[in-house]
Amino acid sequence: MTQSPSGSGERLLHMIRLIASGPDSFTLGEFAERAQLPLSSVHRLLKTLEGAGFVERGAGQSYRQGRELRRIASLIVSRFDIGRCARDLLEGLVRDFHETAVLCVYSPPTHRGVIAEVVLTPHPLRFAIEKGANVSLPWGSLGHAILAYLPPSEIELILRSENFGPLTGRPRPTRQALESEFAKIRENGYALYCEEHIDLAGIAAPVFRGPDEVLGSIGMILPSSRYNLHMRGDLAYAVRDAAQELSRQAEISG
Image (tube, rainbow, N blue to C red; front, top):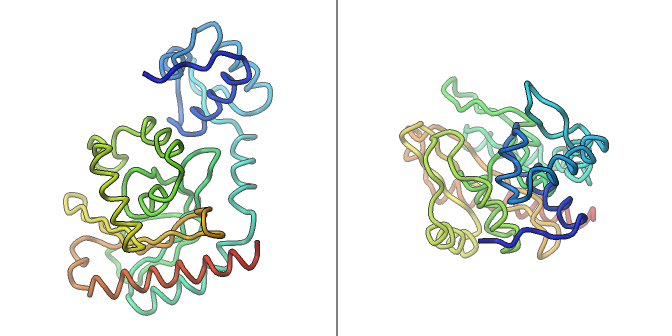
């Protein structure tokens, strides 16, 4: 069991991380159990965070992420106009493969991905995805392409807070299975995902600023029923090339 933080400052930081990583709504009792802290301490520190705008009151006795926390997350995500830089690359992918192309940016305060740019496929059968949507990292190609390159301590924090798939409802894969998947992603430079049960597939590659900082991922999202109609290698290499080009632009701008 992870040791609970002891000092007030450590406890406050611990709570901010938990609030940022979700769920979207929680009660005082639920949060105290998750934080492994006394109810009285959690109540007192939530009052402090509420005053700073990091949490807000939700329906009934619940709490939710505050506007100030989301504002800070947005500032970090928009350190440079990555969406504008990626737009031409995404349009090129759609032009070549006629499937939806997406830019997902990693938000460190929330430990989630944020859909920063979307270019939709011309096909009427397509997966609905909108700008500003949150992406849980332990599922899907967009999330895995980011998660595979985060520091181990950050990966552990994210995995502890995400137990069930947001689309399938299935339990998270084991840590051993994920580590094996991450090793393949780091070897190949891209992540693959196919879930026929919900007719969804994806290919994504990481976007970096410099050698160590992962900013997000570029990917293509398509129905699994069309997945095998494409030359999978062509899709993967095109996505990887687009992500590498955006990484080059990010390094120049930074």
